[in-house]
Image 1 (cartoon, rainbow, N blue to C red):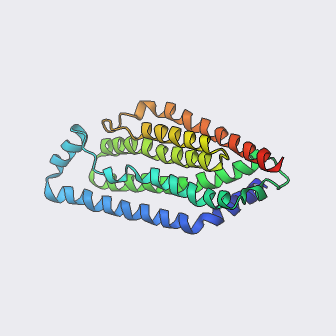
Image 2 (cartoon, rainbow, N blue to C red):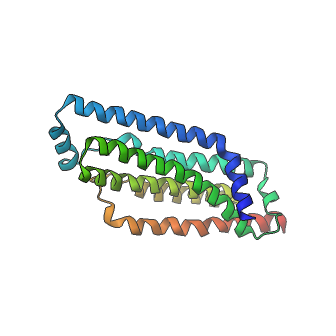
Image 3 (tube, rainbow, N blue to C red):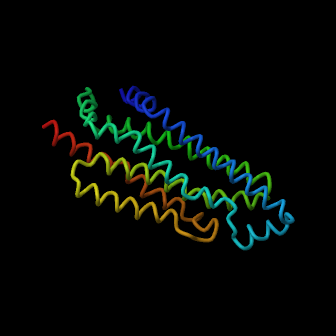
Length: 223
């Protein structure tokens, strides 16, 4: 049953997800052009020094793309469900509300993962063309927290939209904004590297947190 819910949810958002995916690919092309321009204007040694020693980020345009992608995917997936309260229909399925919610989340997280992996893969490819291995590692360690911010945004927006109480909606939205901001702090490139295992913990805790408003919605609406 959870597989059927997964397929239904991914099929539902496939068109809008494709637009988000294409937009991210377009941004990667822009980053490639800007990176290429750096090496046209200066010698490679000068660019390497600015990137590896001075901490210049040559892909700063990518910073907020994962965040926006996570927000959009969550909105495309859950806004229609909550506007018409169609989510109640899913709660009539002969499975627990937790399984229903997990099917929805897995579909959304899978859709976001494809976008996030494309961003990281594209950044790896661009960086590997122009920079040595040290530059590749620093670039990926810098971009990984941004990708986590997108996961945080997706789960936080899902939590906000599924919550039936408007006061808790506002609280969830504020907490999501604060948590996502932690992944987007301006630091030296690669500085978050040692903390990446710790940064996964809040994201893991957000998954069961989304289950809470699902049960609240079920019992308030269905008795």
